[in-house]
Image (cartoon, rainbow, N blue to C red; front, side, top):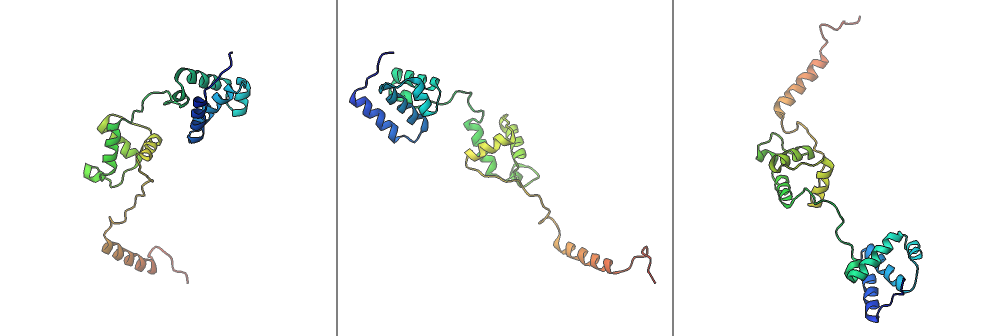
Length: 180
């Protein structure tokens, strides 16, 4: 392979990119180019930077084809998220609304209940783990709901029943033999 050469302007641009980025991949890619220009082999660059020879090849190829922009990794491949902007808007609206206002018989969202509601509303469902990750991305935190009957009982009747129970505990039962 022919030796590389860079102008002072290209060298300075690479060096500037390397020391102003906070992305480790961009730093590594710029360093690959600078080490290549210095005459280092692909194998020694890969060894020193802890990456594969393939990574060195890709960085060098992208720099030759695109320039500095080629050193900045793009969006990783993969399908687009099923959590569309419309789904996320429905999620935010549901979380910010009491389930009872939407006609449900419970007052607290759980991930399962929220997922079922959003599936009905949007036709899109996720696992509870994935829904939790999406909620976190949207800035919501969640915890498992604690179901209690507190607030549901008649406090006066509860106190009266407690008094009766204490009285009954003190009386000997007709079924309990009295020892002599």
